[in-house]
Each structure stands twice: as structure tokens, then as C-alpha cells.
Image 1 (cartoon, rainbow, N blue to C red):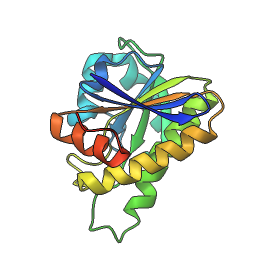
Image 2: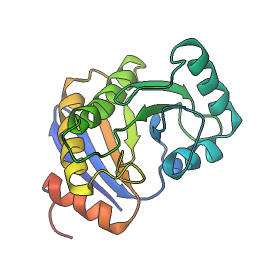
Image 3: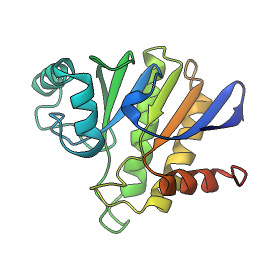
Image 4: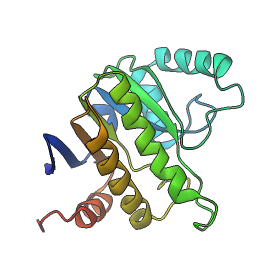
Amino acid sequence: MTERIALGENKHLEFIEGDITQQTTDAIVNAANSSLLGGGGVDGAIHRAGGPAILEECRKIRQSQYRQGLPPGKAVATTAGRLPNHYVIHTVGPIWRGGGAGEPGLLASCYQECIRLADELKLATIAFPSISTGAYGYPLEQAAGVALKAISEALRAARHVTTARLVLFGAHDYQVYRKLAGAPEE
């Protein structure tokens, strides 16, 4: 089931419990590690589902732009390979260190930079996982609050992107995001 919230001016925020690799948006976001060479969780799932073309483009980005790795809060786009999307936008979320090491700003930047890049590519729809809340340990409710604010602001400023979808893995994550967004009780 997809929950949709209007943000005005034909802009929408959607919530769905599911698998990000199954989304048919113009782009999906990969919660990558700085190496851009695949990993566990969402990163591994996207690389497996998309196939070797994604890794090949990530290697080229590492060689030409980010020799030391993609810094937290930045975003780059690659092909989606075998995925049903036009692009995968890779971003590196912050590792949770208690909240005093700039984590909220870096996390907000992840979402903002992904929407900015999608807008630059003239895409209309983008799907996000819950960035940094897995292995990077960002507390879910705090991360959801940062994500919702950053996405709403970036979406309102975007010229082409009209819909951002949060694809949440599990009923608990889905309910936390919905509640913080002010969605009605199910």
C-alpha cells in the first residue's frame, strides 16, 4: 500500500513498505558506502539487482572524480543497469556518532543532493530508502525527522521532480515515517 501526502504545487511525498529494487520511479537512491563498490543492505541489493553495469560506472566515478571515495552528504548518478529505473543515485549517509559530529546536516544533504541531481537530470520521480538507519546506526525517529524535512524542502524547490517516495523496509519503519509526516492512522 502506498500512502501519498500532497506538498502543494503538484508535489507529493509517498510512503511504501517494500523493496527499493522493485520501484519503477525514474531514479532510486542507493545508501552507498564511500567506496561505491557495493556492500551490504540496500547497497548490496541494488548492485545485485542492477548487475555489473552499475559497478562499472561506479568504478569510473571513483577513478575520475572521487579517488578517495564519495564523501558523506554528496550524490552521484549511474545507470540503473537491469533495474526498471533510468538512474541509480548513490549517496553516502553519515555514521551515527551520537549526534554531535554534524550527522543531521550530512543526512539532510544526502536527501537534498539526490533531489538536486534528479532535478538536474530532469527526472520527475525518485525513491529513497531510509538512509543511515541500518548498519550506520542513525536512530530511526531522528533520521526520519531529518529526512522528511530535507525532502519536503528540496522537493518544493525542484523544477522537475514532483514525487519523492520513501521505500521503507518493514512495518515498523513505515509506521514511524508515516506518523512523523502526520499521515492519518491506519
